[in-house]
Length: 363
Image 1 (cartoon, one colour):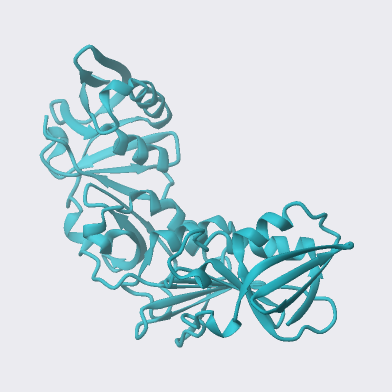
Image 2: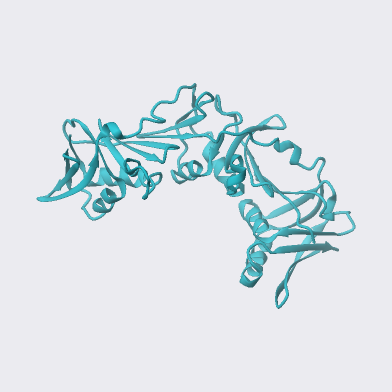
């Protein structure tokens, strides 16, 4: 094969590819990128695929696969305007520029996987819909528990008849409304690794294709196509976890609460999952973390509703995550059982469409 391009173009494409390619792999070709027809292709194991348009100089011929991270490391030290020529033969690729030549191991292009190369389904335009922005807001609540693998991502569902994206680990839950669900995407669960790649793009895709037959999805950008397998599982009925009707029991300054929790979490001896107890009455709330010799208490102003005061415990790290994910100045806490700590609490901010639910801890 023979291909000519610029160092800047190739380095840019490799930077994107490194977002999916795993450095160490039991199948060596999966750590490589395929170069062919003005395109760079990369695999994230067997579950993700990215294809990046690669501007070339003159006509390219043939194809090859070269180790992604080795090639990216070399390109990082070549000036962007340098012309790069890549040739391949006898399991070695030659990279030539400005009188210099490097050789890297290569693989036959025919050995590079074809999975996710084509996904059949109806193409849905997503320009300026905010689909990825909504996913970004809820992804913090996704599970990392390998035994509940179907929670290890973000799902597109109808919640009380409204389209939404949702994530939960069983203890915290976040959902965000979206204008519509793309064709074929109802119930689809995008894995966390794929979600992270999409969020890093910082742009909304032009279109998406979801296939219910192959349980996969494709997202199209200018000059880039990202494809992923979806999680093979059924997402829980989230509506059953929502308190209804929730009764508000506290309203507090979100930024003040976040600052207080950050100070309390600085007591490392308490551990990341130590409970914090919120006790409120008469317009004040105390946030307490008790770890014996390592303990702390913060007192903040708070609007308390007619519930006779409240006392509820939460996982401190989860509470900080929830309050940090919301925007706005004030946050309202509501629960089916008021402030008794006997049922999940909904956290909502004014003018913020993101809703979160947090399970209480026994105190």
